[in-house]
Image 1 (cartoon, helix red, strand yellow):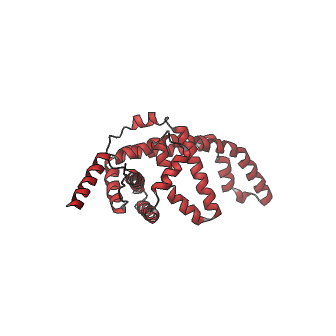
Image 2 (cartoon, rainbow, N blue to C red):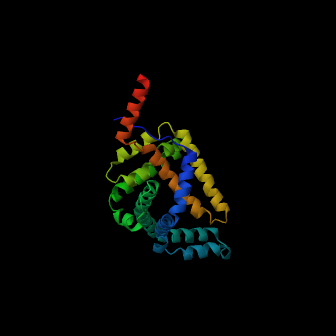
Image 3 (spheres, rainbow, N blue to C red):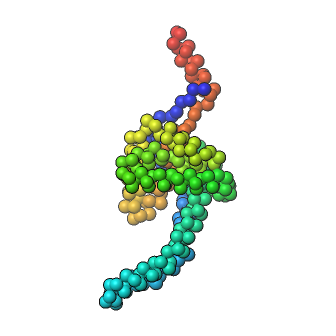
Length: 253
């Protein structure tokens, strides 16, 4: 079967994402709030108030060595719980991120968005998702630390890994990385442009008294979903056959 792909157009992506963000703002915003709350879990595990108070009152101490020892002692006492809280927060936020990515794709495909159903169904493929995203973040971090250019290159070519992992729960880690790599082939500079546009949109949102970013963030999330859909969407086989027959007939004529 011959596979044809939609062309990647930033103008089309913007228009679609704008309309989708307006239509589904409440549901996608609610999911983002849940994810944000999950990421605050680390604060429930460690009481940083004594450390903050000490940093505020360091002028009361004359001995720098005493200050350093006290701060080190406090950090060591709260660090394990902070790490535990961060880990639990990451696990929780990852679960709802699966729901978010699936809701975004539902919106792109013009399906009904069912937040409750997507939250319940996020267990399917959840373990696979967190493993894939962990490896993805590790690869990007290592590449960026070694040299920023390889980090940028891999960030673009592997851009779709998280959303693929969320929407294809039974796909292996290797297949997910390969799919993102193949889909982004030939679109590197267009995707660089997408990243710049998404960044500028969120900057404008911050400038608008920071409130605007609540909407612009959702636009950029739909932009990612539209990029994935445009690059991965396959035309129905029947349509392709008809188009080939029309082309062949025209050639014979």
